[in-house]
Image 1 (tube, rainbow, N blue to C red):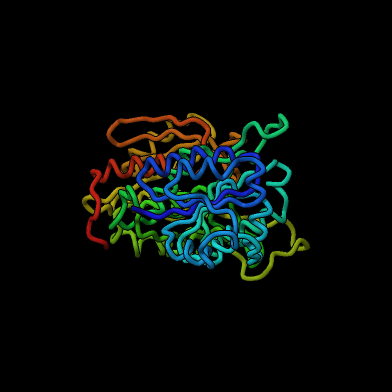
Image 2: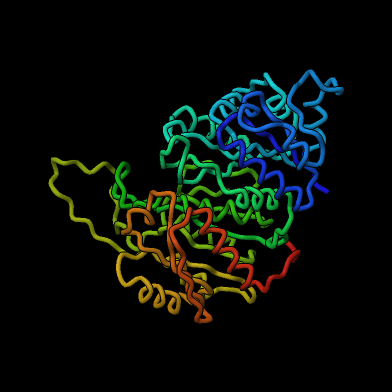
Length: 400
């Protein structure tokens, strides 16, 4: 039975942690609640003691154990904090341990899952985002808050993620239901840059967020993940990263690895054309408007389709601005891939450089599934649900 420390800090969303506690116990986990002093202003320790696997703890000093934080930290298979307030995030990032919960966070070597919740203005504050970035770099896992109704009747980002979403992430982190265990996955991300001269390039608006979300989800579902990316963004521990810039560099990095993996997901926005003769020196304005001659780049997805070994699943992405299904279906057939994920990049809430996406998943078997507007992480989960189906649902395949 996995041991989970459930930390509750002092935000209005603390009442929702009661449901998280109940669901974790129902999922077969031993839950040890730890409430901060501020949390008890919103919800009582007795409630958690009644629902959890052992009495709730609230103090470093008042219980029978002289070092409760050490005992909790050493016994934990996972520490979850829901809600995690701005105050909690700041103290954890700074290494401050002035109560039982923060001391436990510093005393554990178990994975930590933070579930932030706060008002929109606080969530978007640079200090909060910098603290989160610091914690992510250290390997801390985060369930981002949702948009919705907040305290005081406001509506916006900062609402605690739904209890079922939090528990699903807990199950993934505890290696429960990891259908890609023993599988290897190659993901590409970001937009390539094709040099005009040493300082200028032809590029696109892709941020790499979708590809990085796919790599993260694949890793959490048990896969060994290779991420070939142009994006300079944090990557969770355990993912093997190859940084590239141009379409040719991405082609070379992908093709040298593709034959040995079970799944390839081409989420990168790879340039279709590049300057035929980039200048070795910076192009000067005084020399007049240059004539730029373009040539095609190698079609990586088509090359993967042609060379695909038996049993491998190849997923392509189609970024379109018109006739979404028609264009994506044509690419699905011509590239000879198993699944095409098509999205309208002209949409302001589902294109490049945003955190949300909606897509149509077209299968080589004729299947089609249109999603609602989702976070890119949620869409990545749907993509890998389909990938697992295409792999036959097999688990524990020999690692490659």
